[in-house]
Image (cartoon, rainbow, N blue to C red; front, side):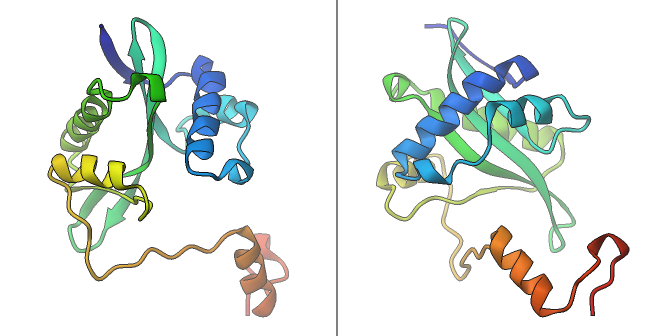
Length: 171
């Protein structure tokens, strides 16, 4: 078994989309996928792209991915590598691919002077929680992740009389 991990390229858009859909099925969130293969193709060709992605391959066949981007920690005074999603196709699980991808990301974080690597885990996903804890990760106590979706953003803007966003006219 020859495992390699490399940055995603534009030509990976279709396979990446398939794996994103596989991840959504695993999490019972098929209806939540809004991105398309065409979106990923366009985004992967942007300079800079809105995300980075590592593709894991066995004998040249994509078998997993890690999609990540950077945030900034005001307390640390440095970037944080934020892992949005890590997925290994079911038929390849248990072969150390996930651990190899996490090592790849740790190396990138170290090279780019990130002082943190962070991600979220669904509270029901005991196998993922166990996997991450075996790597030495710990849950962040005292913090709950919040999100405003597109509808909530629009509602907030409407409630606050933001009529001309391009001009910055928000009261």
